[in-house]
Structures are given as C-alpha cells and as structure tokens.
Amino acid sequence: DPLSCLVELSAVRSEHGVWCRSLLSDYKEACREAVVGAWERPLRTSVYVTLLGGAWACFYTKPDRLSFDDALLKRSNQLGLLSPWIRSGISDVHVQSLVKLRNEGRLRHASLGLLSVVYYADYDPDAMLYEAQCSNLSVPWREIPQRVLDIGFAGNWWILSSKMKDYDVNEDEFKQLPVHMQVTSTPSVKEVERNEKLHRDSWLPVSVEDKGDKN
Image (cartoon, rainbow, N blue to C red):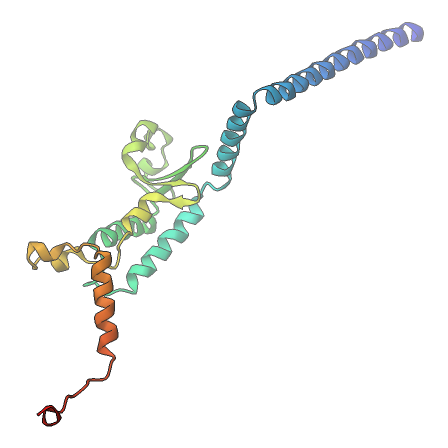
C-alpha cells in the first residue's frame, strides 16, 4: 500500500531527525562544558594546549628516511673534504659503517609516532634469497632496539649529530704528547686580555733610545 509506505518512511525520517538533534545537542553541551572548564581552570588548559601543540610539532617535524639519506650524504662529504690524518676516528668509522649498510640495502626506517628510528637488517629486500624473501624470517620487533642505528626527533638525527661532534679533530694525533698537553682548557678572562695586549703591542713601532744623548 503506498499510503502505509509513506507513513513508515515518515516515521523513519522522524526517528533519524530525533537522533540527529540529540547528537547535536550532546556535542553542543560537551563544547559548552569544555569552554567553561577552560575558563575556570586556565592553568591546566594552557598545559594541555602546550602539550598538544608540542606533540603536533614533534609529529610534523619528524624526519623521514629521505632526510636520513640526505644527512648521511652531507656528513660523508664533510669527512671527505678532510685528510685522513685530521678526521675524527669516531666520526669516520660511524659514517663509513652507515654508508656501507646503505649501499648494501640493509638500512630500514620505522615511524613510531612522534619519532623515527633507523635500524639495520640482515639482507637487502631485493635479494633473491629465501632468508630475505620469507616474511617469517624478517627482523622480529623485539630485536629492533638492539639494531637501532639512529633516532630521529624534532627534525634531527641525534646519534649521527653526536658522532659528528669535533669531526675535524683526530684524537689519535695527540696521543704521543704528554698528558698535560693532550687536554686544553678554556683561558681565563685575564689570560685573554693579556694575550690581546701582547698582540696590540706587537704592532707598535720599536723605539730605539740614543745612549749618547743620555750621557
């Protein structure tokens, strides 16, 4: 019967309308309570907003695999411009090992929400080996912490940056020196002023006194 169908359709629409109005009313009440709560507790609200903003910034600036390759290439070029006698052994060994793993196709990247990690695998994924193609023999998650090579956070790869600290200083070069000469200390303010005075005095013309005039 067409009339009964229209009645049933009208009833269904009425039920859907009531449900939508109830849902909108609930959302409206929740938003009102959130605004009132934020007004009554501004300190807690500011803390929550700061945490959410920081989490969003960390997620947005999280480095990816391409940024790691770029950083590795940049560091490798920096070391390549230096003589092997000048490079830091720590920096050189770390970068060369990463370059070797990358050339072998064994570097892996994983995104963990607010940060990224780079770890190494045993095989290149394109290698036609049973161990490389079988998913049951892939790196288990429990072994990844022991295989991590770098951690990316806030737009930076932190382990690579720390290994490149003083990359142009070869620590082995100073091992033949006495112990007291292997470590340098920051000069004091007086020492700096004295050295600056000596430098200025070195540019002054030399005055020659005539001993005959004095006699």
